[in-house]
Amino acid sequence: MSIHLGRNALIGYGWNLGTIQRNQSNITRNVPGFSVNRNVYPQGETDANFITDLFSAIAYAVWLTDQAYNERHSGQKGIVAANGFNPADISPLRPQADGRIFNFRGPRSSEYDLTVVLKNNPQGPDATILGPDGLFGNDANSVLAEVARTGKMFGRPIPQEAKPLFDRLERGVSSNAIAQAKSARAANPNQRSNTQSAGYSPSTLSGDAQLAMGFAVTKPLRSIGQSWGSFNPSIARSLRVFNIPTGILASRPPSGVVLPPSGGGSKPPSGVILPPRPTPQPTPKPTPQPRKDEDSVKSAVAGDQGKAKDSDKEEDSNLGLILGISAGVLVLGGIAFVAIKKKKKKAI
Image 1 (cartoon, rainbow, N blue to C red):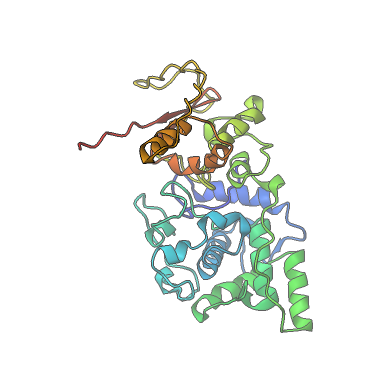
Image 2 (image 1 turned 135 degrees about the vertical axis):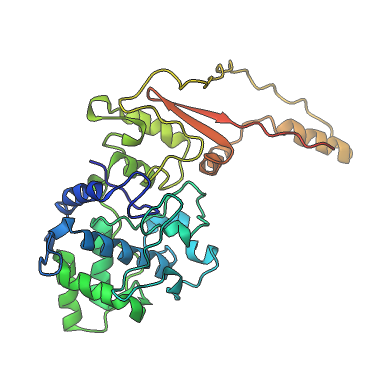
């Protein structure tokens, strides 16, 4: 059963309420002391109102902290400001009377689609917005415990318009962490704010979520058709070579990614031709050039460009920006191929 770390929309992009409800039952088993007040949420952890409230609550966490509340979200830090908004002003989320954000509908008729307001994602158009997903895991537990303990969102005041939502969640759900937070605040109302959430528990995440967050992958990658019967950790290690942007597998395939049908496949889709792998050739050593004048210096620099440098390994971290922008990734039968688009030469 797949558990993700965030989505652009609560319902949409292939997700429906039933899928979230099944995942919710799975993930909340791993939260110590988790319980739901059925006077507030009659259907317990699978109550549609609880799921929607939780999605809005984490959307506020993203907004108010400008995606700085979880260190695992560092690649998206500044996402609110990058879209021209002030994180302290939640009005673009159009909070409703019940405290929830407005039911935005995106291009795919998705519900609560945050890409309507956060169109510019620092990790690229194919990366999902980390955090909001309507699932109560370790991160959401930490967020609500912090609000219960300090009355703030990691040091940021919670606007009045959002308070009905957090009051309802405080009455409607509890855990060991939340109960301890309430006791601490009762003993001393002036609690010092934390700056980061407790993060994610890797064991509760899906294989795709583990890959997206950089954890060791211990479960099948459903996004490429793996099952427990076909699970192979080396596939994840191969994908990690391409340094897929955080969250890219958490909601939808990136632009240019062709995924095999369920169960995998060994042949490329119709019309797709894979280029032959070139035979590796030894890199010729550049001829030393005397540095007599500016022209000879330029020649020596040009020769050095053919060498492999230790810093080239660091440039692998930029491959994530290439995926979905200047490259296509094809995953077939457990093998990942990267086809870089050729750039057209400009006329001089």
